[in-house]
Amino acid sequence: MFKDGDEDVLTYAASSSDTTVATAHVVEQALRLTSVAEGRVVVVIAASDGKGGSARDTLDVTVTDVLFSGSLLADMNASVGNQNVLSTAVKVGDTVTIQLYANAFPEIKGFGFTLTYDPSVLTFVSNSFEVGDFVSGLTPLVTDQSGLLEIGAASLGGDATGAGDGLLGAFAFEVGQAFSGSSQMTLTSLGATLSTGSVKNKTLEIVLSLTEKSGLAGDFNGDGSVGFPDFLAFAGAFGKESAEFDLTGDGKVGFPDFLIFAGNFGKSAKVATKVVNDQ
Image 1 (spheres, rainbow, N blue to C red):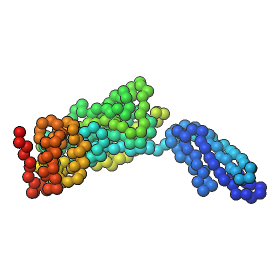
Image 2 (image 1 turned 180 degrees about the horizontal axis):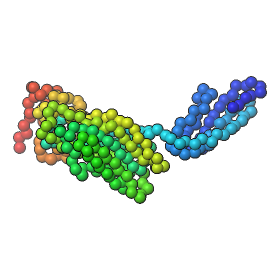
Image 3 (image 1 turned 90 degrees about the vertical axis):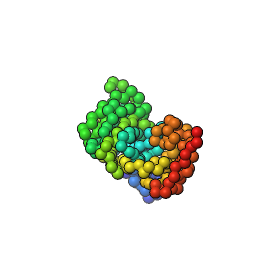
Image 4 (image 1 turned 90 degrees about the horizontal axis):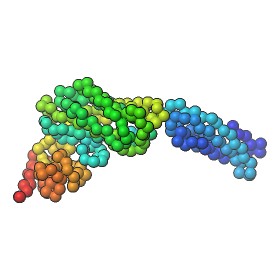
């Protein structure tokens, strides 16, 4: 694009008129454009010979399609906040709550996802889906086809959007009588409506695992022992109301529960003893 008559070494720089649509950089004398969102930008390219000589040129760039950035995170710990728990121990009759979080999402105004599960083992709890606060004012739409769960949330006339990190929503399953040993659910796809109105889809393979409770108080992940991963989960629920981590049955996770947990820490199901709290 540029040529110096004295054959001086040229240095280059590039800038974008709108970095929310595309960014521009010069890397090893090559122009590199990175699309961020759909739209139009003017890219300015400047060259200098270091002796006072300079030149510039412009490019009109239209971004028509952008890959969906960001990722979907799942959490099977019902406590507030993302604990990144993808496996939990359950028994027949338990209710399992799944929270979904946006991670570094672009600006969106609606979303949807699909999840597969074993309908002989798990039952979707009707009306359990609650929209999170990532985008305000969304209306949910849920379709359960016995093994395939489709959930979406969209704005019906509003203009609210959300970007970055936050809670998309939460829903629940009940563990049925056929549960024995283990079962899995898999998030298979994510769709999002960008603030521009375009819809982006992303294929997923997020596996959520259910294992059978060992009967050992404090074994929250169901691996048959009470260890450091259980401690991290317990610490996240300490001081809160959580049936999963309430070992005394008083409705709260507090010091009496910690005594039981500490008594079993480092033990396996075969040798564990339970600490009894005198009242």
